[in-house]
Length: 330
Image 1 (tube, helix red, strand yellow):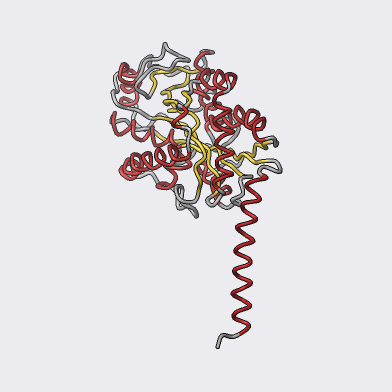
Image 2: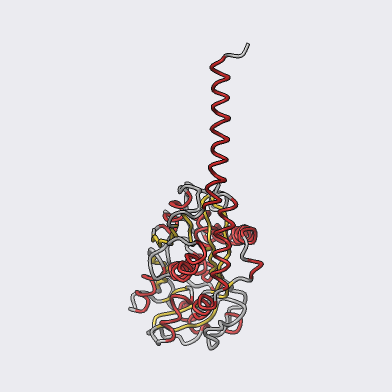
C-alpha cells in the first residue's frame, strides 16, 4: 500500500516540474521583458570592450530592451566569465568572450566553471590576426631586426599582456619558442592599459589586437612589424604578414563570440543570435569593425553550432602549446 504522504509528495514534485517547464516557455515567449547585461571581462579600451559597445546599440534595436555594458576585469578575463557562468540562465546576462576566456583559460587557470560546458554559444562575431608591435624607441625596424635584437638582449625586454594566459601572452610564448628569444611578461587587467604603457615606453613589445594598437601605429606612437596571419589587414595593407617578414606560419588569431549561461532556453538563444546576426549585417557596424582591422564572420558561421565547433577546435589547438610552454596562473 502506498503511503498518502508519498503520493502527495510525488504529485507536488510533478506539478512543480510542469510549472517550471511552463514558466520557461512563457519566459522565452515574452523575452526580453527587461534590460540585458552584456559583460565585458576585460578593462575598458580593449577589443572586447570596443566590440561590445559597437554591437549593443544595434542589438538593442532588434531586442527592444536596453543593453547595459558591465565591465568585470581581472585574472585574464576569468572573473567576468565566472560571473556569467553563475548567472541565471534566462538570457539577461550575455558575455562578449574571446579565445582567451573560452578556450585558453581552461588550461591556464584553476576555474570553478568549465569553459566549454557551462555556457550556451550564441554567435561567432569577428576575428583578426594579432599585430607584433613595439615602442617607438625600439632600435629594430623590421621583424628580422626585432628577433635579432631580442636574441642579443635575452631577458631584458618586457612584453605587456591582457593577463596571465590571455591570447597575447600565449601568442608571445609561442613566438619565444619559434624564435629562440627570451623576454619577460607584464600582465594587465586588459589590453587597453597595457597598450597605454607601451606607448609611454614602459614596455618594449606586445602581440596584440589591431583594434587597440592600430590607432597608435597610424599616429606614429608605435612600430608595427608584422601581421600574425596569412594575409595583410585591409585596414593597414602596408604592414607585412609574418610569412613575408621572416617568421612563416606564426598565426595567432584574436576571435570574439557571444555566450549565455548554460541552460538558457533555445528560443532565447535564437532571439539573441538573431539580434547579433542583424547587428553584424548593419553597414555602420561593419564599417566600424572592419576599420579596426576585424573580419566579420560569414553568415553561415554566425550560428551557435559554428561557435561551439570553433571553440572546441581552438581548445584542441592551444592547450598542448600552453602545456609545452608551462604557462600556468599562480
